[in-house]
Length: 373
Image (cartoon, rainbow, N blue to C red):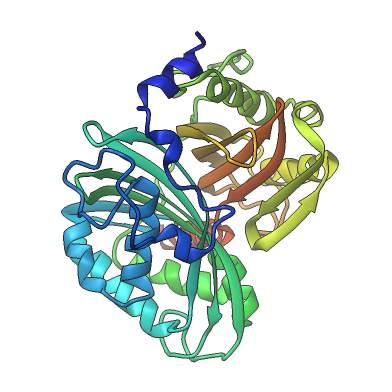
């Protein structure tokens, strides 16, 4: 029996009945007459499995406006890592949620994929991707209402035990939203950077990112300790060869000829050649970058094949040309998320999310630090 089969067996006989969101209407994702199909010790009785929990509690908090559920669904010391900053307590999450709902009152976040692993004893890990649609109709972080519509993508990774989220990583495509609302990204990024500078926040410069050790080439194989299955280990190898060894030709081998790629700024690309160009575009902006996976999990897909979710960090310096402008040499750290659909040994769909606004803010903040030195 393979490592992947062992994992699936150990997961429990009911886990193959856990909901998947891709082919179901919302009413099927929050049923009122469904029996619990997964052991959920410590969770509220309304939740029948971990996917039901994520979809239903998100809807209750954001769409039904029961923001106070955050007190029963987050620990008091929950740490939320966002692309524009970190929050270290539950009350900050409550405040930000209220502010975002008020500014974008008709925004709706629709689950498009949830990849997870874990159990109610050790805790669950979920990677929740949504598409958000709405209209900018109220004053808030984006300033004066523009009345414009928008559609953006968000991925949220959560660590959960007994009904409460205790760690959360959030990436929103803020740059896409700004552009759709007609707001100048450079002016907006400078405003955020100034607030960070005034509060004493700084971009910490670290010379080595450990992609290379001294004058040696990149390591031949990646660290596979994050993998739980054979496929997850293979995906980590693919990513290491592409990003750290710069073997971009690997993309032509592992992506299906009719693959689709969905990325930042709501870009939609088709075919391995387009995926290769987009991947190289990111690396060209940070040409000394190290690609560091931080978590990986996967679930068998009802559509066939397997859905794989990776949370990663790209660490390097702005040494190349690209959408951020001419090279500045400043430090850049990118928190990103990728969902892959792998079938018959090929990637047929990829959803990758990182926020170009957060990258721009880092460059503005570094420039302010240098000017003040």
